[in-house]
Image (tube, rainbow, N blue to C red; front, side):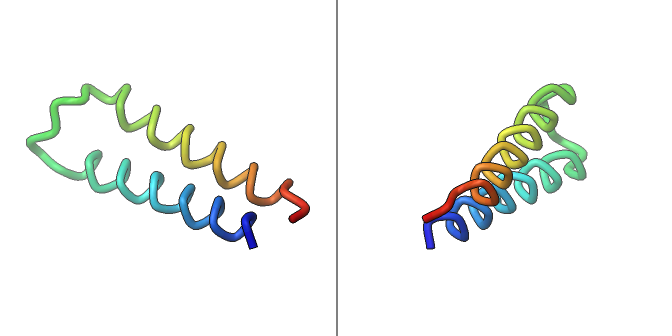
Length: 52
């Protein structure tokens, strides 16, 4: 069950980064979106690897 939570948490980070990327008034300069995407991928992979 924890794995599903990590996967959903990762998807949330990816979606937040996507919405910030689409926003025209974003001040993250591209690096913030990439960071949020990487964090989301990390949580997603952690959820896939988690055996519990």
